[in-house]
Image 1 (cartoon, rainbow, N blue to C red):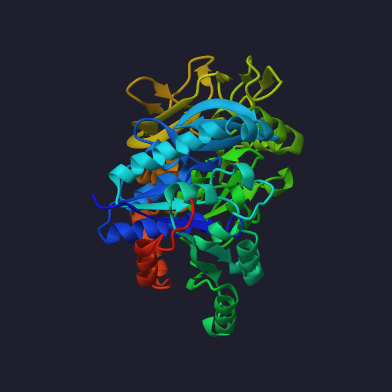
Image 2 (cartoon, rainbow, N blue to C red):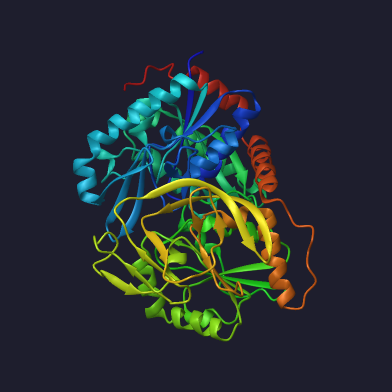
Length: 505
């Protein structure tokens, strides 16, 4: 194989769109015939992705692998940080839990281990792929952290990769953030920047042109693209930053009202994404009891700390409101993973993995109990789901530290090869499962929504969207959009020339 070409994207700050731009370039290079792979050395996110061999990586890298048309592996994200308490994260190494560490201990004790993991993964990927598209994190100008950072310029040096710096014009001050970031960099690192991209642009590009000219003259760096904001892109979000865009107010123009409980440690909220594509569904995210009202469907999503989030439900009054809705038969209630555990009679944590509370009462809406265990389940799953006297082949993935048992005879939800997953009431108004991605199964989602419509006296909708087809179309749409607004030929030229100036390592 010819020498592997690399390209790294860094940002002036978090949420500038690095993950989306990397996804676009993975698709672009794959469309152009290159065997392409994404890479992020260290990711901090509560949205996970399960590889085919049952390992856990950042969801963004899994999605980027899908865009590149390849199967995800842990070498694409060897280190994953999952915050579980204040100033503490679970460290996931090559898809398996390593240990819980506070930030200061992580920086001090894990640094050399992390460096070796990153070098090894880069070497593995370089042997197998023609292009590596690398994503940074946060900002490369965090001068208080740069002595032991493992995700921005140190990785660029390891990979000997040219870097494109991304600025978010939607936040305002894009030229100040780009110039300031460049000026705070070490000169050798600044030489790795082959240009910048301005992302999330809205408006008349002609009004920006004088600023672009000034920027190139002032910094000596090329503007390699101005990417307009792309609305309603059906591609998974990486982390909870996206939650800020969701409203808690019902849209009465939509026939079905779906309320998602947004507790502090919410995780894998991308389980909800398919509902955003449905013509009759409005999704609201709820943080207070007075926002809940009487939705048609209440969803308790996953949680990185089920006990703390259950305490939040009680303190906020949301728990009491959920139970009240069920007593009045006003809403269908669906719990996923941690949300499923909350629906039970109690949760025990004998090893203090999540909390100092050794036992806590659940919502007592399903006859189950859960014990938080030291071992973590991460697996891709499939099975036969039973709902409304029908059967559906479904697939998903499981990520949980806990085992759940029924306390009396009850109805399961999904027959897998090894066990019966989930639990539901006889009238199927309360349902719980460990299957993340359950709503991504089109036929089950259609049946669920039409059952809700029937209960409201509405006609069923027989022709609904295929979410997986929409995702593939979204990858192509994103690639076409970015391709048409960046100087791809110039980027290709810079990648192939790099490092012609002999930048020090």
